Image (tube, rainbow, N blue to C red; front, side):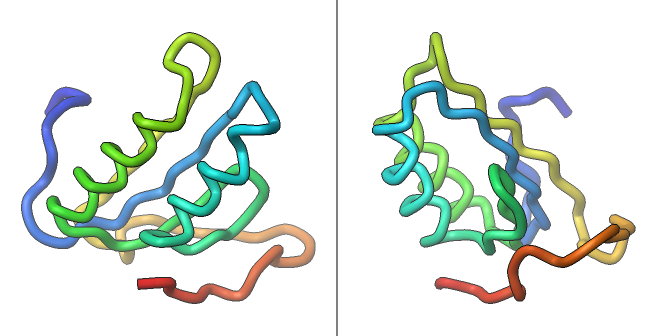
Length: 98
């Protein structure tokens, strides 16, 4: 699968981002919180269907600067296929904003 294809059904995503301009960051965070769970500074996770994923990407693309900002989406067909180990304090309890 190349980076433009969208998997079918619900997919578990991890999004990490680097926003160069601090003035854009609150808008990016607000968009992510509509679709995913905040887990760490610059990281969100959650299950999205194809329509939700496309809507999230569309909203983000209206806000970010493609030359300065970076957003990476990792995905797996099911969350159970991704192991998760936390060292130290967990930053945020998992909550869904949908």
